[in-house]
Amino acid sequence: MLKVDNKADLFHYRTLLFILCFLLLALIGRYYYLQVIEYERHFSKSQINRVKAVTTYAPRGLILDRSGEILVDNYPTYILTVKPYKLEDKEVIFKKLAPILDTNLDELNRRYKKYYRGKFLPAIIGKNLSFEQISKIEERRLDFPGFEYERFDERIYPSPFNEAHFLGYLREVDRDTIPSLDKSLLYRAGELIGWQGVEKQYEKQLRFSKGIDYVEVDTYGREIFELEENKIPAFPGENLVLSIDSNLQKFVKGLLAEKKGSIIISDVNSGGILSMVSSPSYDLEVYRGTTSEEDWDILLSDVDKPLLNRSISGLYPAGSMLKLITTINLLEDNTVALSDSTLCVGAIEYGGNEFRCWNENGHGYVDLNEAIIQSCNIYFYEKVQLLSLESWVETARNFGFNSLNRD
Image (cartoon, rainbow, N blue to C red):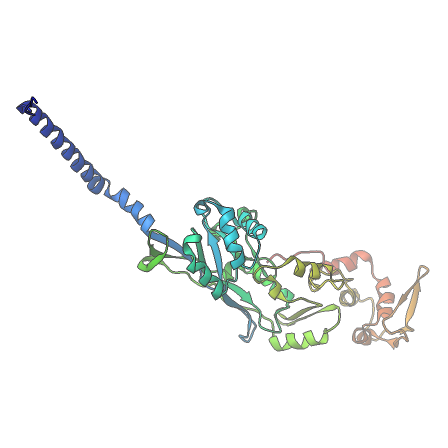
């Protein structure tokens, strides 16, 4: 058998050596470009993957009465969020999650749609998580990519103020309401906002300011440890002290027990409201967590209308307060003397219609002082006839009737 020596001339060796050197220099150059020239850009990208920014919350401001008794407090709960871009198979993941949250697939999809704000922004999936639920989710972390739980404070109402209409309540922010809200307060879907009563009126004072914590995570998104640098602390909202007197509020509430109506008591010197009770009422705890349709149906179908704040939303005849307007008008025009008397027999007829006094038996002869003390309808029915309508209306306007004070 013939054998041929495998020989390569000097040219081929040099060519091969040149290619190897060129490739080695290109590789070193590329390393230099990535590690030195492009260091800042790639370092920031790696930080994004390695470090997770976590929004932190502080408690909402407390609401107290004039003596410092807490009317509205905070209670810590946990919510579950998910980043949509990590949901590769949403339906399969939701089917695994539904039994843990004691809900169904349709409800999870409804919440996801309601709180969805964008592919990379967390959407709230569950609220008021128990320690057991958090543990189950943590044990199956790899089955739930993109899911995180975080602390969130909700309102609690110490008795007997858990049904006080004037306190108002909080409502969840959703995608539809965010565009109409104050941009400076940085609302996000699922957060709570004052929606009625003093919670709404003093939203800016009561609302907290958000903070940011930075946490190092592994490739699965699990937290390793918390970084201390560049943290932005969250600050609680301001406490709000009302003019309400707790003891008086309890007393007035007892007066209206099992009755329909409203009682408002104010300080004649300052105008501050000392007590405001609307009856019947309802438990404000219904607004905590997720309100069921059944709970809402019960409230909405109640014939006594507990949701109606009779103190500010009820429509009532002006009644006896207009007697004082009439009194002032009579005295200013010198139309009557304090000693002028009128006979009240319990009813009077004008234009073929009978008008009655609250005292069916009548008050007998009453002068102006007695008419005010007894709130005698008949006296004022008669005396108001002595005034011109224009004069009476002008007096009423001087006391703020038919005007709206927006201060």
